Length: 212
Image (cartoon, rainbow, N blue to C red; front, side, top):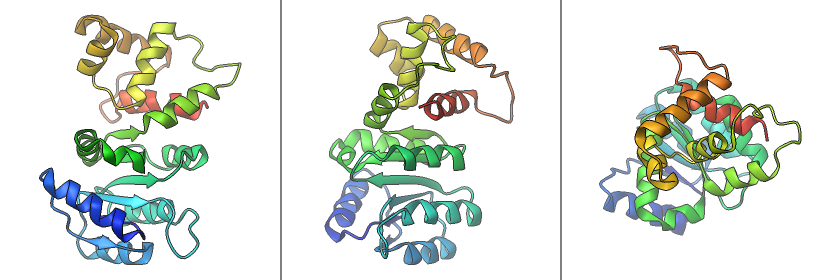
């Protein structure tokens, strides 16, 4: 399901998704229409423009909050023209999974965009790499994550960009076993004990993002 007041962008994204095998079950130009459509037939994922009529403020996030309450299983992918750190951090505070924040330019990478939509549908947290870079650049001098080594920080930053262990292994030129060791060490240093009811990978990423 798509919600964006710009018809050309909305229809362009719809064509991209359909070409990648997705079924676009609805299109909306404002938050009210989106909410009515979700209530009538909840989709697997709702792709929502962060700024929509009538105020072009945070209507998209407010709609996402309401959708999560009325249809908890719907994945929520917020799209924005610009990097807006405060809005992205609010998403991280309000949701613990099945949510994403991407710049609209990301759509131009067709393969990556389809993968991101599927990850959100599967309950993962997806953050645009540009936003992650901004957060890293803004990190406070007294870093709560200071217990991590330089390599572990690099691993966690890539995890925040949605990389799997296999992708980490390829990008950092490390063996899968070494990557698994770094990930376990990150969990330990961040005091994330094993818990079947929580996804430690998501919790580690959220802690990383919230310290910006």
